[in-house]
Image 1 (cartoon, rainbow, N blue to C red):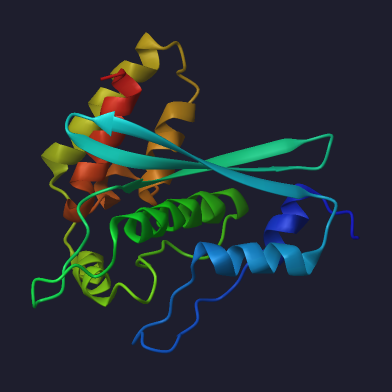
Image 2 (cartoon, rainbow, N blue to C red; image 1 turned 135 degrees about the vertical axis):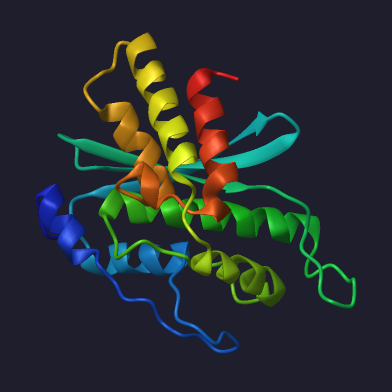
Length: 207
């Protein structure tokens, strides 16, 4: 068992996306990250848990990934919407509800783990390979244009107001908001991310 500083652990946890049978693009999932962590075999322990919460009539999975070595602890969260089961063009459901719920959980966990270990570039991976129709729909989001300057300024002002209200003007709320969207500036938010951004904003407001 190897003892590592957290920064060194993050470096060793970097892993490339890979193509898998039946999928025409490279991706990584939560299971790949778990496997990588086990292979490194360090003194750090990893746990991941899920919670459900609602925003209006929408349900989201919030995954929290925590790594600790007895002295220090770090964590990150990831989100995914528990929407209706996707269907094929034939109209048939791609999977049963329990299987879909597990897939959404895996999706949220992947983003929590990637955030925790600082893995790779901004990621637009999709759900597991048995969800090809959902993957194709999600992949289109990678080509979405960014939001308007007006919308970017709206998020900036809203987050600033929340930061003042909560007494956290140290930038931590700004970082939390942008990190969950995988961007470093409000102007980099894509149009396909507006719903996610609004959900995060509602969570911060306690709605």
